[in-house]
Length: 231
Image (cartoon, rainbow, N blue to C red; front, side, top):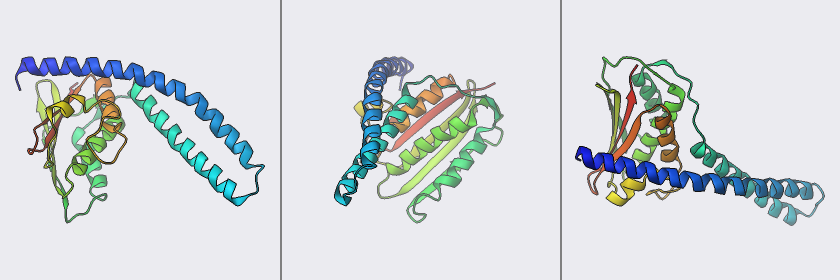
């Protein structure tokens, strides 16, 4: 991809996410108060009802209210300005922790997690806990993209601008249209998931003054590139 095309994509993506973010913030605000009322009144009514059938229906209502409340909370994660708590950390160690966790989540005879981590990688000032969330989101997305299994490869490298992390999967790849929209909330190419994981990851990387992008073509897998400034 040429530098000019990359800059155009980056500008277009930032413009789209800003517009979507405003809409999402408004929707989350409008949904929050009615949910509190529905949940509160349902709890009060539940205490006065003895009929088992009615109680079961009220419990279904309360479960759905709880699910929507979690969704609104996740929307808040996308719209808020992240306050990161920086400390010196080695990104290799963060990735190793994530790979240890992810390795227990998938069938070991179908899913493989390989790494090629730069042994000379210096520490950088970052929020390793927030970045762990980013790597977890991207790596699990990579695994989910390979329905029949395959290998997810994670590599790190020290470059002029800082640390570069590449996460590659052997999935079916994504189209150009999907690639440009993949960080928008609720936009997902998977059968499962809310479509918020990559959106939140984008915001966390942005808070680090870094960048995250997807390189892909249909039938050729996908590589997520995450760059974090050094120092």
